[in-house]
Image (cartoon, rainbow, N blue to C red; front, side, top):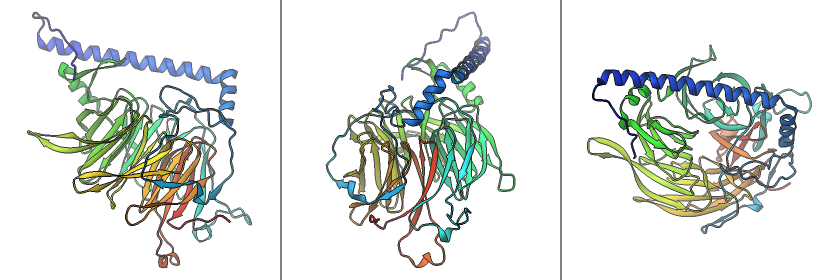
Length: 484
């Protein structure tokens, strides 16, 4: 990696150099903070203008007019539909030969908004009260969490708690489809959320990872316990010129810090490691116990969109450069480093999301051409399995629950695939009802009632976040859904 050059006068002692460098770092940080505050003030003034309000109203009625890539190329506008249905899987098919559709990676840019969340439960039409679990459908929509303003960019589920991140500074916490708690950061656009025990990690547009701790059900509060990287480590690294790298548009920055949006994160609980991917094209490895950055890898030629810590010590990354790469943590000399093992995919269309089936040792990759490619572990390598076709527009998110694979798309639908013995896949349902692109998915196993325990087919609760500013909750299983 190219290093920044520093000159040290022979007449100037090292202590004065270090003192001068720390003072310069502090002044620059204050200047950057002041610049950011001025930018936010200008943005708020623009939002209050009538012209901006009219543009927002137009965007609300045309959800298709969003960016597919980070270069702000727009797709044609289409009239949105708000109908809710579960369709038979006639449009889905499975193939071992990949094909191309259209478009490229996608990005998000929306103004800061500050409106409250509102809960609209699945209601009984007779008395208008929230129906119990026994009255909810065995498959289909359970409820919706709606927000007056603000696109939903990230989801995470841990036990009974659901975490939702959006373009605002708030991270909301939900329990049993009701507003439970929340916490607020100093930066908007929560791009990624992962949870480990009582710790919650949030990745933001400003390149920071913030760490929060849950204080328990009684207090229902979250305290911020740190940032990644910590200020102390950042200052210590800043003293040594060898810890600087040259980056585009930013000059020289310490290698321990992301200098662009943190787009994805994944946790290896067994090793106590957190992996973060960024639009700065790097993959960083953090030790959770002390929040120390262990490694920074120039992983791709374009923005990282997804990272997942998988089986057998492997880590997979997907990027806007159209590649899926495999990394392994090995001992190199006296240190452990992540080494590139293989490149599974090279294509023109961006890889937008990754998901892993740990029991089957399978990897799924969604891409902007509307396909979901998958690979299976065979001995010491990953073998290509084929593609799943079910979407007309880019796949924005992929999730796995048991033998089910779910893909959310810019076409506003969610395809549910069942993985059978032998690696064959069948599309069992297409969930529709969102009024905008489905941006993120989270899955957890459903807790069966006494009557359902005799049922051999396990079911899953699926949370889908969309650019229609809502989160929908579904119950799905491996049974095919026929049209009525």
